Image (cartoon, rainbow, N blue to C red; front, top):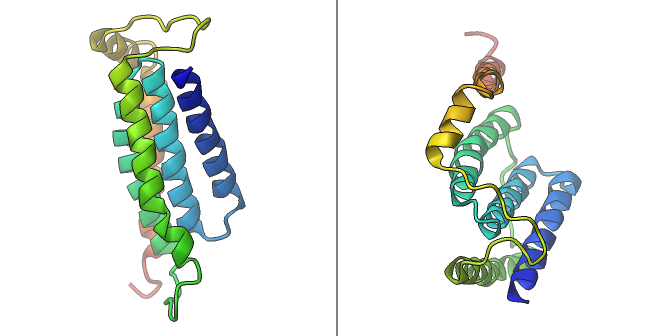
Length: 166
């Protein structure tokens, strides 16, 4: 029963943060919603027993890729200086307790060692070596294509951020 509760909490968090990402006008807020979405997907991976995918999701996507996105946003869209009192201070004060609650929920799921919900097919067991062989044989082209696209995005941001006179 608790596995289902954890699943529905993570699923609601993933859907809610995806909606926040799409509906936000401020690009930095959208990027933060994307970090929450990637974190909740990592939690779903943990529930499926795919610890490596969850760690890769957090390290690669929520870490490295989001730093690149936020850098591009901040370079291309200079922000305005915020002055005056924060109108959403009360809502923002709820973020740390809700984050702590989510961390406790994830710790509970990991500690129980529960896999997929009852009735679902268990994921195929895969070792890190098997995953590496697949990544560098069958999926080598998409893997390299992604790295080239990220490199092109970084070069594009630098070119767009460069001043016209220099």
